[in-house]
Image (cartoon, rainbow, N blue to C red; front, side, top):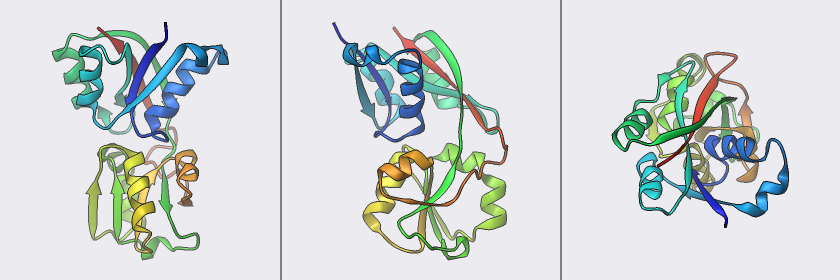
Length: 190
């Protein structure tokens, strides 16, 4: 019987790529035995396990730049989830845009999940002149939103690979405050 793994989605998020790393790092034979399911909040991911819609979930719990991710820690503890496996993944944030030749100074509106903004504060303050932030439930939702809006003055923080999936251009790579920006992920179950 296939096992279902849930992640913070949609496809292209950091959690998606971390889950792929975990599931298929040793062999690709696992693909036939596994379903993956995207959810749009950490709460819904945990609820999917509690309601037996998912067997396992991947959750980020700590970043070496922004610290403990309190929301996921509380959900794990409150719902008495078992941690099956832990691993770390290097996170490389980028400024993504629908426009190829945009200057950083042209960007006035930034879409992102709150964690990348916390992890890139120095870059944002020093290099961007943001007038408005829009927080999204995942970095992929930020990417999809700017793709749909298709305006010059907006950008998203996300990963380069996910950006390519949504036909976005990486305007600036590796913008994290720490050069080795690492997030600790856990695989949880009931």
